Each structure stands twice: as C-alpha cells, then as structure tokens.
Image (cartoon, rainbow, N blue to C red; front, top):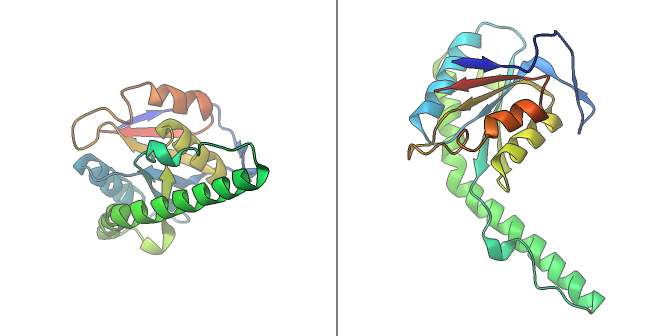
Amino acid sequence: MTTLTKSDNPRSPIAPASGRKASAKHILIVVDDSDQSMRAVQYVGSLLRETQDVNVMLFHVLNPMPRELMEHGGSEDPTVEDHLGEQLRKDQEEWVRTEGAVEYPILVKALERLGQTGFPIDRATLKFGHERDIADTIVDEARAGGYGTIVVTRQTPSGTKRLFGGGVTDRLLRDLPDLALWVLG
C-alpha cells in the first residue's frame, strides 16, 4: 500500500463543492471489476472493521458515455433547441440507468467482500460516477462527499493503467491536497 498526501499538516479541510467538512473517517473506495479492486476493499474492511464511526462509499465509475450522447446538433429555433436539449438529457439519463444496471454487480460484489471482512455493511453505501474524465469524476465525488481518504488501485483487469497511467495520481494529489490517497496494488 502507498499512502500519498501533499503535506503532513493535520488539517480539517472543507470540501469546496459542498461546504461539507472532510472527515478521515469518511472513506471513498473507487472500485472496478478487477481482483486488485476487491483486494483493496478487503484490505480496508479488515483494517477498519473495528474502528468506530468509519463510513465507506464504494464508488464505481461507469464507462464513457457514447459520443452521440454528448451533444445534439443544435438549432437556431429556440423551441427546437429546447426540445433537442430535453431529448438529449433524457437519452443520457436512460444510458446511465442502463449502464448502471449492467455495472451494478460490481458494486454488489465489492459490498459482499467488504461484509466478509466483518466491516459493518450498514456503514457502507454504493454509488456510480460518470466518466468524462476519471480523475475529474473522482475529484468531484471527493469534494461533494466530504471524504478524508480516497482508496484506489493501480490497474484494471486488462492490466492497463487506467487509473494511474496518465497522471491521475498527480491530478488527485494536486486537486485534493488535504486528502489522504491510498494507492493499493
């Protein structure tokens, strides 16, 4: 395990997007369907199962939305523009629902693994994020949720460095300097 922080100053940061105070006992675990991810969940559960007041968010980032759902062609007619925008939002929501249903078993598996460690699953919640950029998605969730610690793994099942091959670690450290980042491999 590698724990990364920008500084060792004990601080009690405010999550900027939410105004919510970050807490070391509020942990965001980014999960995928890899063995490394399940081992990370198991590690955190085993390590913290006896620690009071620790809450865990199991967070899975969905695949990128198809390009055709990113924007509509537009129109000079404001009524048509409004209709196209509303239809696009509906299509995006439907895609997220469908993709979420396909990906939901990943979160269930992570929750089961967490429970097997003896960690109280009533202190765990499940959530999807939408990937436009994986680092931005994690940063947005960390800020909105007031997490004090983010747990991620190094690789995806294919062995590609999806999370940490393109400077994502650096971006998380830069954008969330007051949070602990656990990089598990």
